[in-house]
Image (tube, rainbow, N blue to C red; front, side, top):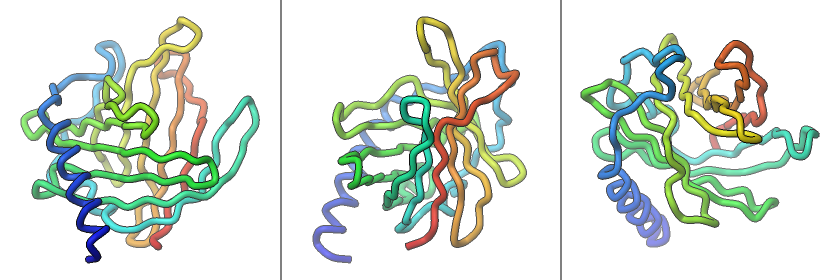
Length: 185
């Protein structure tokens, strides 16, 4: 590993350690289907490494496409996954931080936008079942409650997909708003 890579990994590990102290097990919604308690160390090992990402997202009502890249580390014996996402064309970067609550057997999924530098609370809580993982979190849109879902599926050794969907009717229907096709670099 180069000096720059070691420095980046150290910074990511410190950030994950600091955030780990803030995790309190919770649920996305008391009235929605609860995630299954299947989480275990190593669930995100498939994501470790270097990635090229083809993004497709809704921006002002239109689907747009752009490329990105990510570096992902598994730390603390596979109980934390730290993702550094870079999207040069949009001058954007951020960090996905996924931490296992071993007592609850659920993963917390946080986001840190480089523009703000703080964890976006609350996290989505979820786990993997039958090769796909779903993380639901509450949010507000136009002063109305919504559920925001992040999902990992189509997982192979060389690729995977992440997508985000929003439900405005308490989980009855979902509208996808962002799709990321990940391919190993």
